[in-house]
Image 1 (cartoon, one colour):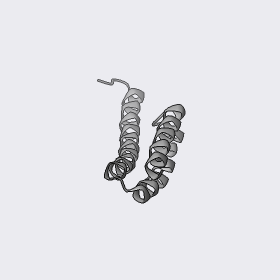
Image 2 (image 1 turned 60 degrees about the vertical axis):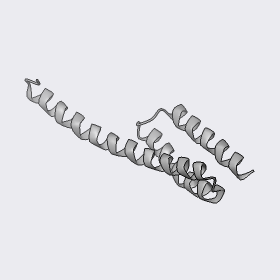
Image 3 (image 1 turned 45 degrees about the horizontal axis):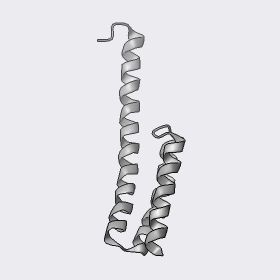
Length: 88
């Protein structure tokens, strides 16, 4: 347990930051799930629309430090390829 006042403040800050990061991660996963469901249903228009909504969310997560930027780019790239394959 934290003993000093600065350590106690650090614990409070970490808890607040963790809550924000958890919310961002959850939001990003929700958008990813919508794309996955559209791909599974075979609806290319819905998949393309869901992907257009998910892409900025994924990149925002990378910008805010929730994901590494290469991880975000990889996710976007693979989703884009799957959406394009479904449309073709």
